[in-house]
Length: 135
Image (cartoon, rainbow, N blue to C red):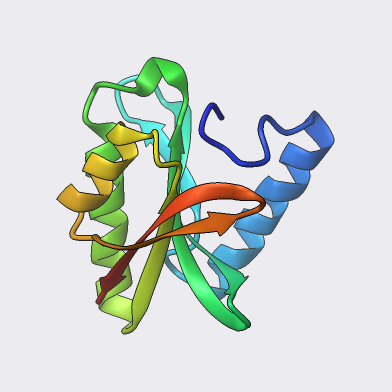
C-alpha cells in the first residue's frame, strides 16, 4: 500500500472492503476480484473496477494491487489484461484509473493495458495521475 492515498487498512476496514468487493461483483461482472497464483493457489492481489464519484458523476475506477512477493513476475500486466477482456464482453464506456505520480511501475502497466494519460489531478488530498480507457 506504498502508493495508496489511504495507506494500510486495519483488519476490520480490510474485511469491510473485501465484503464490498464481493458485493460489487454481483452487480458488475468485472468488479474487483482476487488474483490467485495458479502454481501455489495463493491470493496475491486483486484487479477490476469499483464505482466511485468523480467530479459529481458516478464512474468506474479500474484498479489492482499485488502483494510485494508477487511483483516483478508479470502478474500486474496479465491480470489487468484478462479483466479488461471480461469488461469488453459486458460493458461499453470509459474506465478511469488513478496512480500516484511516483508509481512508474503502475504507469507502465496502465499504458501496456491501453490506458492513456488524461491529466494530473488531486484525489483524497494527494496528487494523482488520471488515466482513461474507452472500451
